Image (tube, rainbow over all chains, first blue to last red):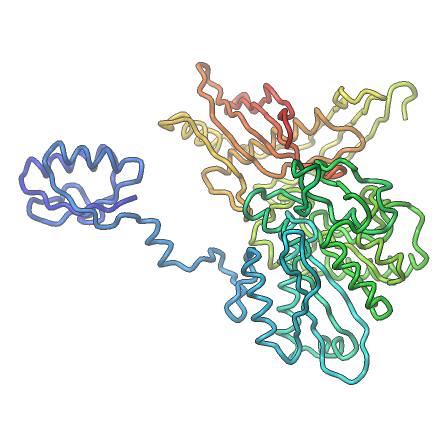
Length: 384
Length: 175
């Protein structure tokens, strides 16, 4: 849209302009009504983009000179208004947690978080992705001379599940923001360290921003570069390649050329193996479905500590529902979702980590993977 | 289980109006999945108890708005990557949803679970009769395989006659 400045010289010009304004329903900024257009006086009209050429042609035809006052109304509007349209902005230290962020910004966020909370947070190298990007995790740890058990949480193993990395960022923010004021969090951190990997599948996440919003897998090439991507959550060494997978690279559940064939999988697996005896609980965050899933996906045979796993999950689901009424179902993947093998959660449990859960966040299919940003806050608050 | 025929399910559902949350209506349905045949849609009989909200005003307004557009409507990526739908495209989105329900029905088995992930593309096609025609490419997410399947769907709509899917097919070629 453009705003034109015209000073009509003759009565004929005034008449033509009045006709133009009323026929095309142009938006008069000055004066307000066509009948107040006068020769020798300033006239400002906003012309909608599709009509700009037509109007200018008409002015030229009638030898009415004009000047473009505002060449792009939208740009001006955007510049003068804050980016966030919803009234509930969650901004902490300048970062907007109620928006989805591209990977560049998440990298910057990690650096900032460590800088602003250097007493509690350290950023660590985990590994590299196929496209050679660095994977970092954040360690939130209260300094102490006693060894602490670990809770690990990873987000974004599947590229299109944007609410997942958004939750990891929110989680970190909540913990750090309320550490001083919330005795529960302080007690928590007295005895436990939190390790958070905000985006596991970095290459895939970037691809979902730039090329294909509904991409799921990583970006390693197969079949001579004619086919891309392994489903990282089928690539772990737990009954790998047995069920709920495909050996066909073009499938969204392609399990790779072998267990841990992918650098992202190896980076996570190696680290978890090295800290195995200290990890108490493993959480991996996905969407959608509103489920808390326990092992296993490859068999309905329950894990040895199934009772404990289920009890903890049920308590979590109840607490979650208590916030906004969102209902989550609890159970093993094989029983309530579908069969799958090679999942990170299953592998982690088989190497001896007792509590291992997959969270499938909002919603249940209405928006699916493309959850509107205005649901980031409630989703994160209830999950917290 | 019906020997030699298939599996029949009896359902009692509560339907919620997406545009008028809190307004619900009961529905009973019978669904019969045919044995063996993956290419026949399941039989569905459904009865709605109670009244559905009247949308006459909004229907008329939408119909007239589209009919008076200078050029055929074209749009893509509804919602956008961040989940936003411009208000004037909301009816197009809702129509896609309804159409995806039909496509889901026609292509479901007991081991599939479809959801509309996104409207990839929609193009209005001018017609000589009074129907509005929209040619959609819908992205359907299938939960078990995790695939996102592009589907070509032609929808006809008229304020009194309602929505009909006149053509639907999985988009040929590799996703």
